[in-house]
Image: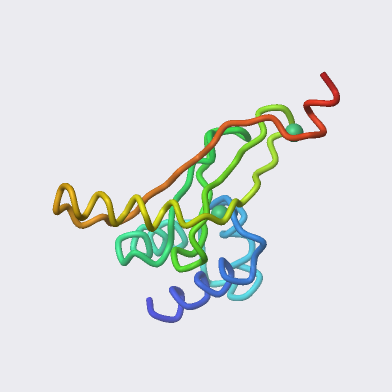
Length: 128
Ligand SMILES: [Zn+2]
Ligand SMILES: [Zn+2]
């Protein structure tokens, strides 16, 4: 299990980000043919529980599949273009500030914050 975990984390880390589970299955298989679909899904849910991987729906701009990325990347919000479906990562300290405010005002311990913005990119604005 530990080795499969490492393979999957490595695949996610070396990707451009926001991979689908089906992409992860293909890429993990390339590294170790014994890893199958069930293993990937099981490992993903474990990595989510451990707080290492974040599951995103990214506004479902490209269907119903979820996307995965490492939790420890610099905090960013996702901006999705509703015209062409591209996803932009926007770095901001807003996430940390929101975390601090929630902790301060509610005493809740935040596990994860996901902010997804629906927008129209410059190219798509020009096309209209
Ligand atoms: Zn666009
Ligand atoms: Zn991201």
